[in-house]
Image 1 (tube, rainbow over the protein chains, first blue to last red):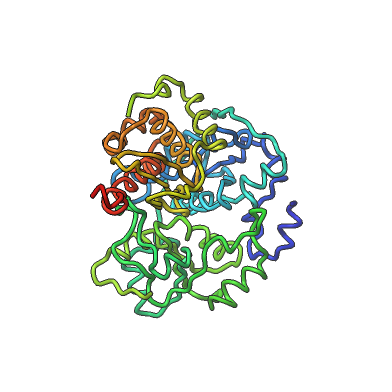
Image 2 (cartoon, rainbow over the protein chains, first blue to last red; image 1 turned 90 degrees about the vertical axis):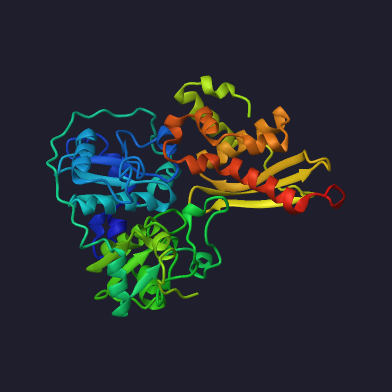
Length: 289
Length: 143
């Protein structure tokens, strides 16, 4: 796939994606571009990664180690400095599971105002399928200057209170979990009640669009027309809506946030990262099944 | 569970061990005669497994297998654990007493990081299967 083919998919912001070919041509442009792998399967980077790519681990790197929150601005600046990323660096995310974790990392970068971010369409699976070069060599970059940014959660992140207000206003919600979770048939993993919720179901009025419906078999995103058919034709959203997406902890819904915000060009989409692990445990929170 | 030689391996070798088990899983496949089939995990987060357990009628394991899908850590660790249990001939009590932290140490804490639930998915589901067997799956004559 080339940039022309991405352009041909009709996205509102085609520049949010780059092709595997583009990445292959920019492997050595390390002064301007930082390729970042972010996976669910954390061993994959060690097994082999795109040459010169750094690893961004959403748990180790992006989460606050104590409180349920993301890292603070000082730690973000330090992480960027360690990875040789300046505020002007274009960060290209890619990863496993249809770029699920890549879009999650991208969303966290956006909280800190690092807006020069893109996703490699097709992710790791496409890069591998094309037989492109992989390496186990971990690159080392000179420490970069990255001023401590301000974190702005208001625009793209929703908290519980925001969802409650949204509910009162009958605002559109998208539940991107599996139908079993949406219907309340799955509460938590056996032996891992802390990973689940005390009640099953979904936030009243939420449409159910499992996140992976946005991608094709080869891992690339569906075209804008195909996406509109799903999110607008089936789920009833429209571009002017103020949309909140959620899942279990906010990772799958970051993928949907990326699709709606960048590919379909919605102006107001927020990711509720508290998601079902918060809502399904809240006393007296309304639930539908 | 007995200390495993894997503890002495370096990071690269421990990753290679997990990958090798991931690619060539041991004792994987459903067990037709199982007394208990215990699901665990989540296909949407790390991985899911089903553990098949058959008791020997005297409160010990006769057979153990598993199916599942997930990431390298959850699938590789499940294969490693099942293989250790069967190779070492562990009793049900010994499996229930197996320490999650020791398992993580043997797999490599530097590799597992915060993904401890992925690493312990197999062992915890096996423990759940044993508890289920003792509650309901034990042949009637043994109750």
